[in-house]
Each structure stands twice: as structure tokens, then as C-alpha cells.
Image (cartoon, rainbow, N blue to C red; front, side, top):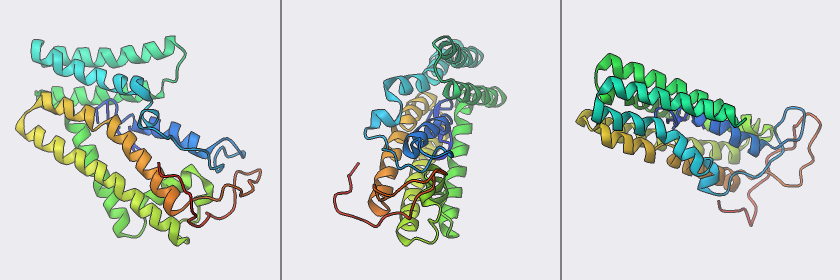
Length: 267
């Protein structure tokens, strides 16, 4: 939903320094599916969301690609030192970009991962410690958690704006109680994600556990991001489902969000 953390945001990618920051690119792909293809605006058709965790994170390939630079950094750093670890991590991220270009695959994820790894490597070189490699991820998650909580407290949950961006039928979310409630709960899901990442990674950073930091980044990166995406779609579809038979205009706009009905899928 937000940049996520990783080795993303709406997420950072959500996890790894090169995948959770990559969450933004992955969220864009999910948004395309959710928005469908009707209308000149390219959204507002109520398409089907991802139905499995693997689909939400881009399958095993997505998890592996996001983990490679961080695993390479920690492994080489332990054997050959910080400088070598930084070089190998950047080389691995750059290699993923080249591989996607050669295979004519989308490169947004790889480029965002390369940028995130480069920035993490810069911080590590400045701090002179392997743990510094994970500082950007930790700081980003703290900021995202605070922003999300603040948006709820002031009555403007960021989830509502994201929902409206994915589908214009949610554009009146502030005036529709069911949609506003869904936006609040969806925002809480992502606050929990960012807060959990910050707390766990922060403790490991203070303990100087670079190896465990890498493991936590992998587990809390795309896998957690994918689970949060599925939870968000489930909340929105249950609390503020869109009527399937609403006519769609040429401008991609449709009718009001439908009321809660029986038989809403539990994703």
C-alpha cells in the first residue's frame, strides 16, 4: 500500500532494503489488477484482487529477487568485510536489472531495488557497520507507521486515499460510512505491518545482529507485504463491497459503493 519495505512504498518494500522499498512497484501492479482496464482512466472496473499470498508477492521469483542483494551483503560481509559486502550487494542488485532487461521483463521493481540497495550501502559505509545497511528500512517503517496512525487520528486515514486511487468508485469514501470504516481498518493493517517491522528490526539493530536482521528483513519483507495486501482486500470487500452489476461509464467512473451483501468472498 504504501512503500513498502524491502530489498518499495506505497512499502518497501515493505522487508529488505531492496525489496520492501520495492513494494511501491508491486503495489502498482496489484492496483492495475484491482482497477481493471475499463475506462479511459484505466481504473474503476472492480477487477479481481490477488487471491493467494504467492500471487500478491509475485511468486517465488519476487521473494528470491528481493532477498538476493541482502543475503549477498550479509554473507560476504561476514567472510570478507564491509566493503566487499557493499560491492557484492550493489552488483547483485545491478545484475537483477540487467537480467530483466535482457529477458524483456518489467524493470521497475529491479530499478527501485537497485536504488534502495545503493542507499542502504551508502549508509552502511558512513556508519562503518553492517547494521547500518538496514537503517533506511528501519527509519522508513517508523515514519510510515507514524504517518498512518496520524492519518487515522485526524480522521483522514490514508487507506481511503489509496482505495480511491485504485478504484474511482471509492472516491466518495469520506461521505460513505461503510467505505470510511473499511479505510480505517485497512490503514490499521498497514500500521501494524510497519510497526512490527520497526520494532523487530530496531531491537536486532541495537543488538548488533546483522545476520538476524537479514533474516527478519526477508520474513517481514514481501511475505508480510503480500499477507497485508490480501488482508486489505478482504477488509475492503467485506466492509465496503462494490456492486458487481454497476454500469461503467466511458470515463471509468461508476456508481456508489454497494452495501454489505451476503456471500462476499473471504479472501
